Amino acid sequence: MNCIVIDKQSNLITGVVASSTLPTETSKTLFIQAGQLTLNKYYRLLSKSRKKGFLVDVGELAKISHSFLDSLVETDRKR
Image 1 (tube, rainbow, N blue to C red):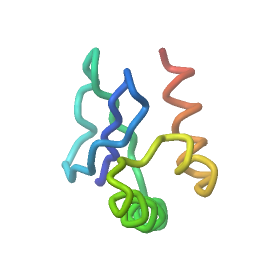
Image 2: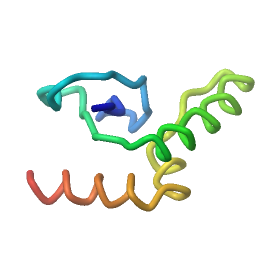
Image 3: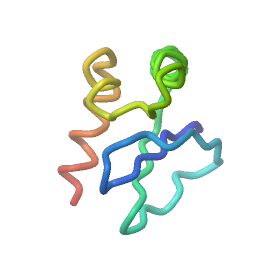
């Protein structure tokens, strides 16, 4: 399973990890499971952002990936 790593304070995506289980959320980091289509969209955004020296914001990815947005909403409901 692939997970997108989000810094909670800044709402920036700091990376992607592959794990057999969903990693444990911490006070600073959130993990959202992501499929291949979402990862492809993320990597395209990351390529554009890196040219400007930025990381990808969660909102940018949520705008173009409905499944990622749904995952964010589900995660928020569980809290």
